[in-house]
Image (cartoon, rainbow, N blue to C red):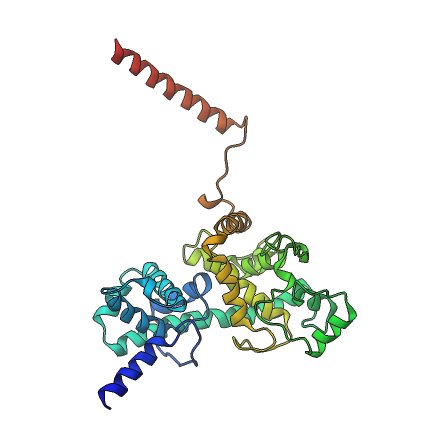
Amino acid sequence: MDKNNSSSNESHKRSSSALQLDPRKKVLKSDPLVSHGRHFGRTVFALCNYPSLLTNGILRLEQLEDTSIEDFSTEERQEHLVFEKLLDSYPGLLELLKEGSEEELLHIGELIGKGAACARGEDTKSLKPIIIDWIAPAGFNHPLTGCLLCPAELDWDDTDTKQKLQSGEIAVRGDQWPLFVYANEAYDPEDPWNGLLRSCLLVNGFRHVFTSPSSVDKEPKATHAGNARLHGMTTVTAASVAYVATHIQFALCSSSVFSCTNTVTDSETFYHSLLDLLEDPDEHGEVTELLLWWNRQIFPMSSATKQSLKVNSALSKICQKRAALKDADVYMSNVISVV
């Protein structure tokens, strides 16, 4: 192979996006990286080609020695952000990547990808049947699931709209968010943030995946630690909300096999569109408030949900008294120093 062809192939490898799934490859050996991939896929980035992510990330680190991240395209910057999150989440991974051969680097990516794929498969398999118990039969051909899947901007009660959705005449894109992502399935076109990603269905789905299937019930019966506890997860992430929403969308539809490119659900576009919004710096205020709400639902005792003490409670009285004593001590020390 001549130098030009080699350069062209390398350029093609660098330019291909890692934030898209690759055909599955069988990885036989288990590894801690598989376990880490399960949690990373659920909470940081789900639909990802991990070998490409690592290969592109290492190449980009070398390029960043002579250039700025701002010189890369938006997609490349987003990909590199996911790469950095992966490095931060697994101590020692960067050293493994730098010291290993190209074959070892690809193997590490396959192990992480295997974990993410296994988690996605398990969640798909477990949510698809249970969600029917929460609501009713699936797809646009059932009035309840059809309403939940109906794009928020459309009117499910309109007969013509309903018929076109059922027949497929109206093709729903992934960035047309369904009503189930809104609290009480109520969408306000004048205030689209109102109730967004706060539905009971999403909360149930999140509990099913991260705390335990039985935690959806009022009286949990779980005897094993859930995924959140196994991985030390104490706060809800934006990506974990988008992950659960994507699985709920699939569980509601009539398709039996999960596919990111499914033309019925357009899952990959749906997932990315939610994540793009939740990671948009201009939406920081709304997202912070949303995640605080989520943490109160899922991890009410975590530091992320700490609120001010209840007025007149015993604890607040003790804290007030202690603060008063400290102020008095400071005052006396200042008086003595002046004298």
